Image (tube, rainbow, N blue to C red):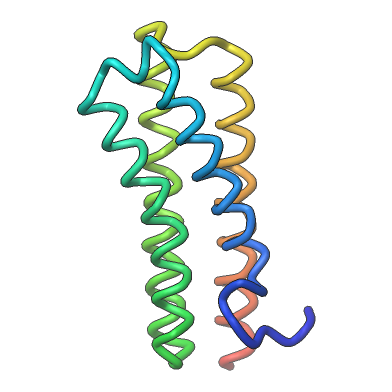
Length: 123
C-alpha cells in the first residue's frame, strides 16, 4: 500500500465518490426523484460515506480513523438497504439497482480491508 498523505489518496474514498455520483444520477430521474424522503435519505447516506472517511483521516489518530471508517461502512450498508427499498417499489430498474449495489459492495469491501490493515499495523 502506497503512502497516504491526504484523504483523496484513499481508494475507498475515491470509490465512495463514484458511488455518490451514481446515487445522485439515480435520484435525479423519475420515479425515484419524486419520492423526496427516500431520495434525500439515499443522498445523505452516500455523502456520509465520503464525509466519514475524510473526517476520520483528518483526525490524525488511527484509532479514531478506524471508528470513522466503521461509520462510513455503516452508511454504505444503509445505501444498500435503501437501494432495496427503491428497487422493491419499482423506483429504479434492475440494471440501475445491480450497478449501484455492486458499487456500494465494493466500497464496503475496501473499507473492511482498510480497517483490517490499520488494526494489524497498530499491533
